[in-house]
Length: 471
Image 1 (tube, rainbow, N blue to C red):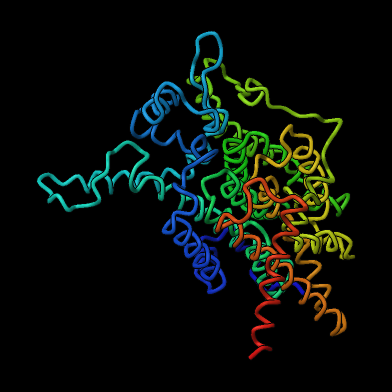
Image 2 (image 1 turned 180 degrees about the vertical axis):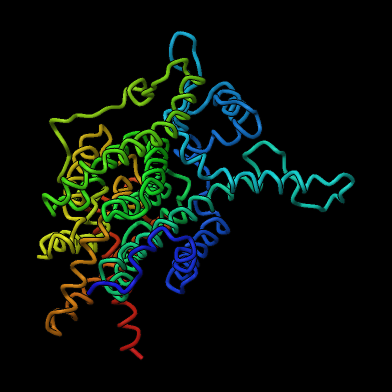
């Protein structure tokens, strides 16, 4: 059932503000904040800025504290001359310049939060403050308020992405279907975990940008907004590249939105060539800041620090089965609710009602091939596979199509779907809890570990039953 939302209000500021203050949106934000607070109050994972997050966020102290476009001063001030490899920073080339293999986009999006932390740190430097004043930290960009400012920025942008996805879904689906789909996405996948417990990575930022770009492309496809929509889409596309350059592959895939309409879609592309040029120019203008940063760091306008560090792809031998189903990082093992999206791709809907189909199929297959071909296909580790979180911005549409199809079926179909979805949520939250308390390894599971997890709980339930019966 199509939503009754005003079709011209997708980028209307007041309408978007109302979307962010609705109870369902606030529920997801509260859940993220509670999990974030529990994570760092209990000290489960240490500092919010760790591992890859250091490489994404090191630009902030470099810009604000050291007033530099390079990362060398910030890295040396934090770690000394021996910068750990896991930060993504290292000296390369004959000149031994310090380069960062991660893009600067996540740092740009976290900058407002960092500036607030910088102000609070400065404000707390009260002259003559009593010795018991506990909140005096050095203004080095790493201590006190800074890590949590960066952590909360990742949480905020992941939340923005979820709200925008819900907002966009309501253009094509009923209120209930849109809300239920986003709830499943939040609690039935690893999205909530990377929203709160490991938020200082690129995925939350990319997810929000993907969702915003889809809204803009959909609006442009309908002929709404004109050059303003093109400027907005171009700037978002440029930010996508700044966060993670490889994610620029999503931009042409997003233009496949509406490709099922055939001639109408092709006509729109041909007639909108001026808008495409405007969007391309804006994308290039925004991405030029990344090029300038690479120039300042390495002396070259284009930098592939991944290749320099010996990391690359094996395009002819992708680990597709492992990526999808393995115990270590299989997408559908850890987040089985995503299987509803696979089913949703086969739901028959008119081209005008399912403009997302080709964009979803093409980008999902492309991303699967890229991730499965990477030399380290589990992406190191984490809770589930984190290489597809950005793709959730697209994947919610076939998920919603499946939910809507089930709503129109017999009662037993609806109940069976409800049982499956709730079971998937319970499965995901169960393993999230194990990961939270470190019973689950950063590198996932093997068969013996999986058996031990369930056998241990079976024994506990058996002993509890015996105790009850014995009484």
